[in-house]
Image 1 (tube, rainbow, N blue to C red):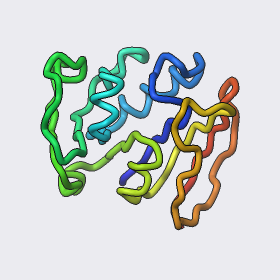
Image 2 (cartoon, rainbow, N blue to C red; image 1 turned 45 degrees about the vertical axis):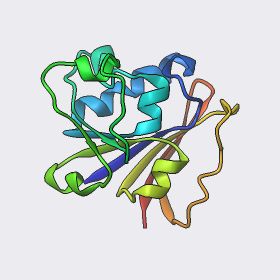
Image 3 (cartoon, rainbow, N blue to C red; image 1 turned 90 degrees about the vertical axis):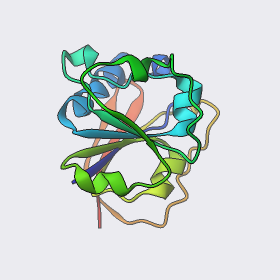
Image 4 (tube, one colour; image 1 turned 180 degrees about the horizontal axis):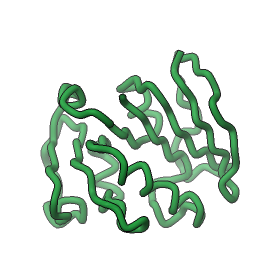
Length: 155
């Protein structure tokens, strides 16, 4: 099963509201592999673990053509997991529960079975529209502080 989590609020995790910050690590604790784009790693320098919920860190696939990353980026220092840097998504087939985090670029790059999207009423400088030719069944529409939260299943 592939599930995508799409944070559309801005580039830094610190910008998200308290509830969104707590919801983000929970799926990370449950997944076997976390997929993230290379530009996010270079820009945000994330840890990508589940420390806020006392959970474990999943393996990470950095989806990128370039392997040029700063080795002092926090995600490379988390123990108990593997980090892969690859230009394809073939590795997804080797894992049972995959979580894909990203915005419009990642959304366009890979199709997931389920999508969890946090949509902020203000945009942190990126694009708000996913420009995707996809159809979804809305499973849940809710609110997390100021963000809209959508659970969607791809049709």
